[in-house]
Length: 432
Image (cartoon, rainbow, N blue to C red; front, side, top):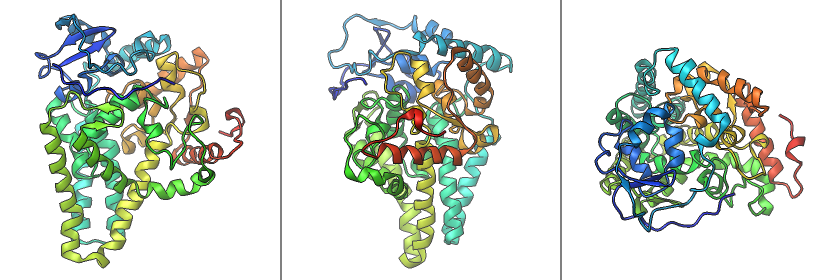
């Protein structure tokens, strides 16, 4: 586990560090192929892992990197947390997989870029979301609430997630705008999400100091043996599901606080202009207006109680389960320190289902593939999966695979139960 310190607020010029070299990206911000909003994440910190994992065709990115001005004097307040963490390019397993993906998936299918989900795919999600909103606002009932809740989850997984990774379309500005659907519909914050998810979670998956997804729910939930065991954790397998129903208000409160402070736990929003703070707060207000203010004004609290329960509570539970099962089963909790980035991403994640599930979950069912290639269009993950499985088999690495979400979820519940007990069984004794 890496040791993390709260970094100072970076106040210098647009500088980032890759492989020990600092680069001035002032003139490159608006020319970055992935968009300025993606490059912002790297400002003021060591961006080696983000750079190497974001560019599937890394050789092209490295050619551009060589043309950027080098900064000889490293800013004193540049965030160095995670700088000594294993890097993607140093992983023989990851490099074998990456090169095969470029050859057998991208070039073999005529893709010049790894970005760009088919238009009909993400338009289906957007139209479903707008239709669900209309039905909920014109006829609030348990069934329209349930439809809305499911649509909010699909927007969260199949639209905003890939857009905020910069790869839903080939146009950066459109990716940024579609990423804001997180703010408008599910009510999250694309600004907070980008830093929390990409700077923290993806780079350092399951690291108890650097991955916010591990420690942000503590002490209510215990996801790692290094965390202090509380008496109530023995019941977390049960009450955890109730807490997932409260995911919506929890996210709202955390988002507003983090937007105001322009930081997410240990991650400072160093490269983002302060103007985005006001955009984020404004979109929060728009979200509250359409989901809460107008329906309550039109129909009253008693009419809206049941529709809200199905939309917010059931929807929140499904969204939480969609994410949390991917890294919290016995197979994903390796006690040894991380020494290989590719191996770490594979062994701390699970995959379930195939192409159909990938359509409805935005590729998040194939979490192993997503963690290896976070900035690749999610419709390509089913093509990447056989390559990953084959390379894991050759290297003797366990590939954590479930048949469907239900089996993955049951593995998650078993893990919650086991890790909440005073004397939990060894991971090797847990049933798959």
